[in-house]
Image (cartoon, rainbow, N blue to C red):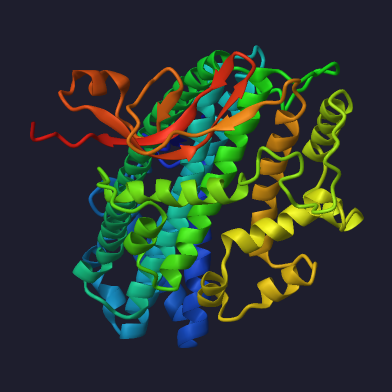
Length: 502
């Protein structure tokens, strides 16, 4: 765009060699009018100041146009540097006239630069419009950047103009008059460094978070792989283990040795749990567990101190299964000695089914005089003797209630009822066979035989065979069962037999 002797290419004003154009004369006239009006208001001498200002303004403008170092600098610079010493000496009559001339000079320079920048802005905007028809994305982007750049220049001119006027008003020197531009550049540099520093800090933090995230992802992948591996192992184990008929019994379920073996396993688990409960109460009551175990099975050389738990488990099984050979565990003194061999197995198997799926509290509440309710009362007194209860609870409330035919509501007694149920249904199932299943246990000192015994310790049969020692039974932990020609092994604790002197 050209006109008025000024060409705007990227915001650079160019002097017209042919002379002063109409646009320049108009700007000069506007500057003179502004200067005369301000001078008249401040000095009160309109006529003298007008002639002096007019003459000096003409000389100042000629110097400004002819000498680029004292005039307008290129429009592409961000701020305008004003040479305060280039003002005509005759304007230095007073401090007020000096400030006025400087302000007028700054204002005139600002107006010229503003017109130049606006012309460049219009040119950039026309380029932006022309880039839309036809549509050219690259040209649009370039034109858009040019428009934004010109707008930034307008804003920077405004800020520089205000700063320079403030400096002139304070009567600062030329060095101070150049300070706003330098300060602005310094502020930009400091701000830029600050932003760069913050950006680097944020980037470092992001990198750390990404590293932590990647580490967590690796840990998650490892945990997922381990979990999948464990699931596969568990599924293989489930396929290998036989299904428990107690959990999924068929509709036409009948007493079988396999079912009896599973029920015996459940009963041994219940006795093991209650034995641990007794040991925990003994420890709280500060019992000597070694002495207690020795009173159950004396003079046993245990391979490990923890093996004494098998003595307490043996104690529970022995007390709960005492009288197993009797149809009702001898709990009913008035029971008939005449037994129908055909009716008894069917009745016992029916009771087995009913109690297996029933709640033990409901059973003893609905039939408090039944054989099972009596069995619970009698066996509790057999296992928890008077001295034991008093040391456990500090009183004999359980014994008093049980002796009166009342089932206590304590958690300790509820745990005992679970044990009693497991033993009772084992007894009912054993009497469901014809002939009935018989219980057996091995006497102390009997040589270990894997045909009808299982060792409760971790010592494997291979280790026992490779050892030079002879192994014998110390005591029976869980009795075995014999159904016709089928033997369900008993569980025993074995020790090395003493070596004879001969």
